[in-house]
Length: 352
Image (cartoon, rainbow, N blue to C red; front, side, top):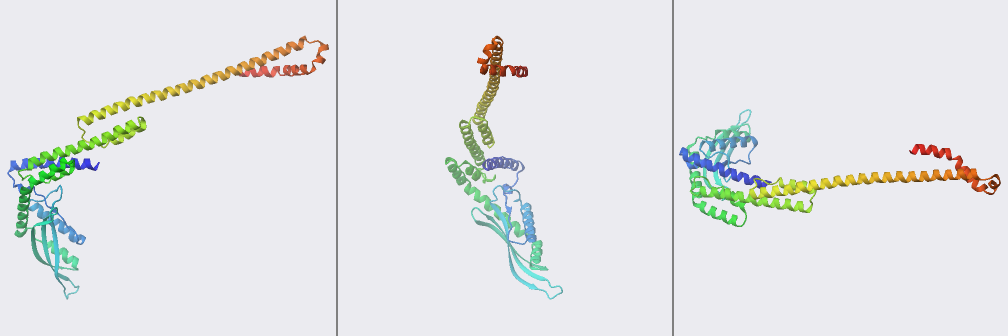
């Protein structure tokens, strides 16, 4: 996802810079005003750092180099050296410190200093930190030497890009030919609008950023298609949706593939749901048929038992008294069956 966000930032930057160029042409502004130099401070106590940063922002804005830098390549940063410090004999005691305050404008990519400014300021405070804070407050942002340093840096930045823009474009094309479209677009976006190669750089920047997006979209699309072919069910579909959520600004081909895959998944899930429903219906039907057969078998057994009882009853009535003794064993069984006749009838009523 980070790659997509970065790509979108590149495209957005290209559009914004191109718009700025057109506005500059319309308003006849100095092209150097498009240079952005970021304020950078570190290594001081919190109070002094805040004041330093505020001073640098004011200087940047005042001399037309402020704003939001895309790559933070050029910076203006302070360097403060304590020259001497004494303590007064007053009550309470105070610290008097003499500082050398320098401002450096540099290119952090080339690790070079483009211009610098220096002044000495003496300040009084309750402590050295307090004296430093007061010294920063005394820094005069309207000093003509600061303006000279800024203008010198501007011209050197312009000269740098005018001499390097062609080679930057060549390097970017080499990166793109190697398949590294994102790095190529990022490199091209560093060329400011005052360069003659700016329009070519912006056109290539947008082209390479889009290629990077298309390439990354293809990667996610292939993963989604593989996920579905591996698991063509509801779990696979959920996995596909998670993968497709990474796709941004799809081209026509990707849109068609997404629609095709979604249609396949939709048809398959419907078929699976229908089959599952039919399986459930078959299971219920089998269960009912089994219960019906059980009841039928029980009914047959009960009827057979009733017929046996009736047969025994008829046999008992036809027997003579003389034969009853010989068939005493059988008669006892019949008598038992006859005695259970009432109970059987009650059970039959209950079953039916």
